[in-house]
Length: 255
Ligand code: 8X3
Picture 1 (cartoon, rainbow, N blue to C red):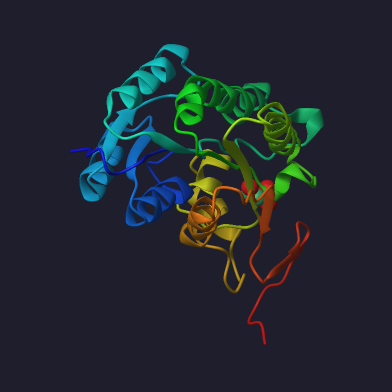
Picture 2: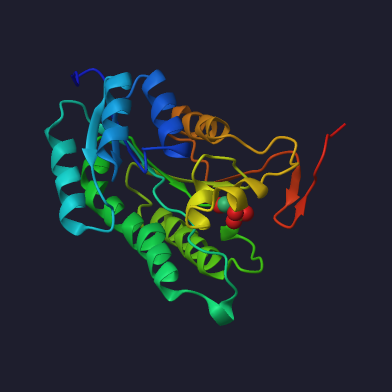
């Protein structure tokens, strides 16, 4: 059960990967975590593990996001943290043959859904007088690559939303932190991108010494959130040692 002593942290996309890892690290840091995602079974188990709250929520659905905000407002603690993690890549086709259903999904999840959750929870974050919004974007927000246009366009847009939001919130007690990870080997990112093709997904990380893990990124989330409230990490770009730039990935042992 939530107790009044623990501040609240909402994590979207908490069913796996960076979202689940962030939920765990924030819970360990003393937050009552509200794990939000579409897959009820996974977040229910996670919430039980963390003594938190699970809210089944598809962030592309306005009514479900409104219900998320209602649930959070009924919990005893104050809302201090929102981790906008839900998002992802769908497809890797060139512009000339892109599947626009994939592009539409990427826009609705990474950009529109992020706005919807942020707007719904912002009043509670402001009311806490020490709010933090963490936006998990990507290095794809700062570079492009063949086949990536639908995703890189959505991530460029998401980072533009983060920067704009920081300007608009100036003078109010809410930080806006952007964390832009490079290559992270999670169980689902590439699987989703390749519509369930596990072999193709595994090849993305083939021979790369040590891609980032979800936990590496979650550590960045926790660190940014735990800094004193006057310290705002505007943007933290984090890549594995094996990835000097978006297009420069070293295969094999390093050193
Ligand atoms: C994921 C990074 O390189 O697949 O956000 O676009 S990349």
